[in-house]
Amino acid sequence: MRDAVIVAAVRTPVGKGKPNGSLHGDHPADLLARTLRTLVERAGIDPAQVDDVVGGVVTQAGDQALNITRTAVLAAGFPESVPAMTVDRQCGSSQQALHIAAQGVQSGAYDIAIACGVESMSRVPMGSSVLPGTDPFGTGLRERYPDGLVGQGISAELIAARWKLSREELDAFAYESHRRAAEAWKNGEFDREVAWTGQWDETVRPGTSPEILAGLAPAYYDERTAERFPEIAWKITAGNASPVNDGAAAVLVMGADVAERLGLRPRARFHAFAVTGDDPLLMLTAIIPATRKVLDRAGLSLGDIDLFEVNEAFAPVVLAWQREAGADPARVNVRGGAIAIGHPLGASGTRIMTTLLHALEDRGGRYALQTMCEAGGQANATIIERL
Image 1 (cartoon, helix red, strand yellow):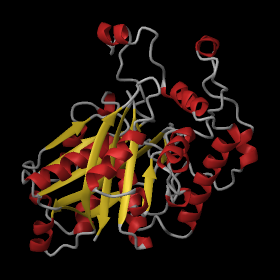
Image 2 (spheres, helix red, strand yellow):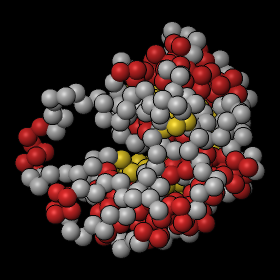
Image 3 (cartoon, one colour):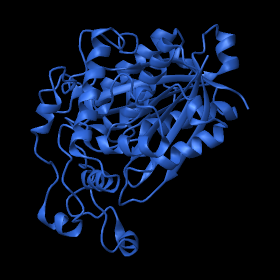
Image 4 (cartoon, rainbow, N blue to C red):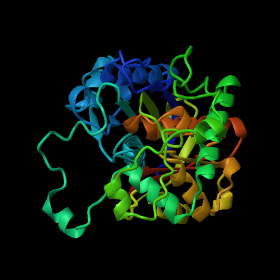
């Protein structure tokens, strides 16, 4: 099969997903357009050569409606001949965009493709695509799950309870995410990947501590849920969960033969892909079978992987994954994760890949694995090999 390779990857600094956030003033289409322009400029390619642009967005409403990826392509000044589509696999949307772009290159359907993502949670709040008085689930799902499904925060509480994770463990993990991200920014480790300089990721808190995090109240407690799930000890707070954010990221993918013809340096090749589903009540655990599945498809063992990126939607998600997978914490989210850097939903898949690629290069590793939990009980997993 034809090799699909990464030639360039960039991301914005991640902003707070609030009206006072640094990226709130940017329309999400313009934010993504700016990122796309930076990507092709850094790669030194003519955007007319791009066969397709695949973008991820979760809340496809308001400022993010009507195939925002196509809007961004036109806003970026790309030729009108360059098509684009927008996909939704919830938090894994732009990781799925990467799979589509890379698999299209491998199959020969594309020579060059861009995978990207954007989310402006300050302008288009999570859940705002569900209009008042509408039902996105229908009767079939309710009949299959008569007791009802729950929101992600409650799913995170259920995971913490099932894996017997203490509040101290959750807060310690969150603190380490902030420590690693702050240290990475201080040491210039994010400089190569960020589309423009002069701004840190806004939700990194260098001054936090386990003691400060321990003082935060549970974020999801309610009496009805407590009666339904007496096992929950209410440990999820704003401190050990990802914040709401704005941001964009983009990755340039092409055939290895195309890169050679254009005189471009391939930086990594896509080695294996997997996507899987799991219990939609726990919702966030599909990263566990997805990791097993992608390793099996790659013919690799956990010990072959030099770096891991596991999206930090909530601290117990990554900690439960670590227990089940047996991964060395020192190799997981080495520059911090979404608890610190932020989780601009549709952009997170390509944001994480951008960070993972640069960390793999800086550390001289060979293989890296990325996985993302997704609403509805799904997960994507991707393995890349540094070239």
